[in-house]
Length: 110
Image (cartoon, rainbow, N blue to C red; front, side, top):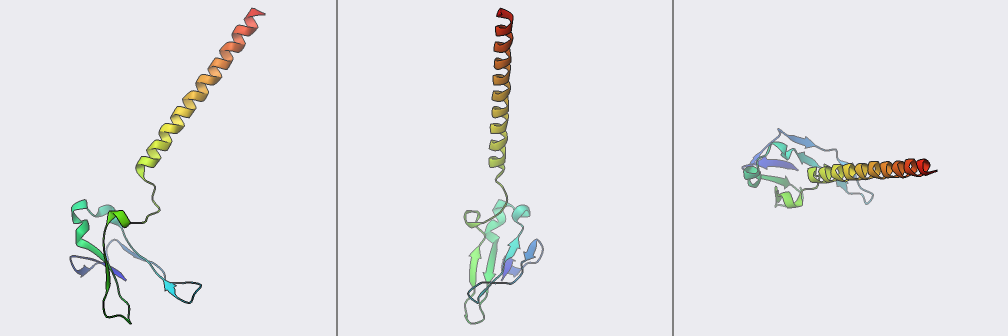
């Protein structure tokens, strides 16, 4: 299994994974391509090639944002979490201030 650009095998920005056994006697591997340096216009120039020794035809998968699996967090998810955290923090401060104000007013009336 390997990545290629414009029909040429590439090695820069490619991380070869280990060959790992599965419970059923088969094996798995991964070959990761760092897409951070690939411009959106160039994505169509990349593909992943999987070769079976017992099959004459290669399995070729084009680089496609819709089918990429990643462990990276979406920046919009992180931004949304920060906004929620700020709003909740402000709400807590307002509630604490309101409770303190009520306590002071109640104490002064006694």
